Image 1 (cartoon, rainbow, N blue to C red):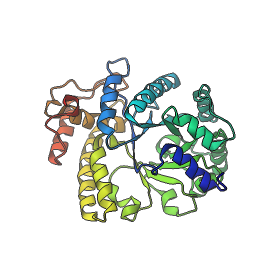
Image 2 (cartoon, rainbow, N blue to C red):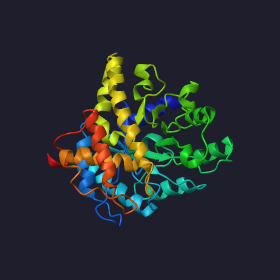
Image 3 (cartoon, rainbow, N blue to C red):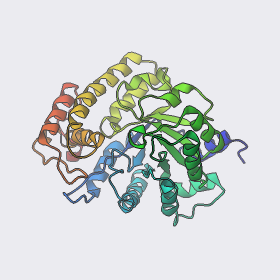
Length: 352
């Protein structure tokens, strides 16, 4: 039996990732087939099949996948469908539990695991039960509230950790209005081995920079741009990335990481810079839309170009969660920026 928190955490991780936690994670886009928000499963499957050779781990539904806009029932239906596809493609799903009311995340996980025969009081057994469904854990944010104290945040997340299921805690002050301090994260990591992954999208990176004893917790960065500077192979404080742009730049990111591991920092920087230029222009344009999540809209536009190639500007623009289609001008900009950085394919992945 494991005799420490770190040992138990390692045993849990081995249930999913016997060769170590992947360094690149993707918060998957949700694709729609009409203006009523019906999920286009075949389009989702095609997107996953395109990413599968490079990315094996997906957060769904995350912010990029419109998780904040979905009802709990819609989230559960999507996760069930994704788990089926994940089993076919040998992928893993980290379930996004995007509920920020006090006690809501815990209640949502209890409901989601009710029929899965997840044992209580057995961290590794809980991981094994979820692995059979291709689920590698649940992602939870702190409750919403700028005035929440650190003890209140700690107690809320402890109540989730007590369920025994594998967990990722998500620093998302843009939504929650607060941040977990490094000390809070360290206290949770030192007590709960089922908390094995921490994602930070704040852009401030206080937890990763603090250098506290996180008991081998895996740290992933979600903020965009200047990617090569943040990975530990290049001297940064993170073990990996969980990036919305992995929906579109999975292979370039993989090449960047390989360059960092081999010590070729100039090559890694060149890839990082090319991606950053596209992201800066397209994300800035998407932020001006009156509907939807800018992360989702920007990645949807870029993915549309990668899916259709030279036919992207004549193919119907994709639907968003709001029921509206992306404007053709955003598709055109995405094509131009991808082409400028030599990312635009002649033939998109939907066309073989």
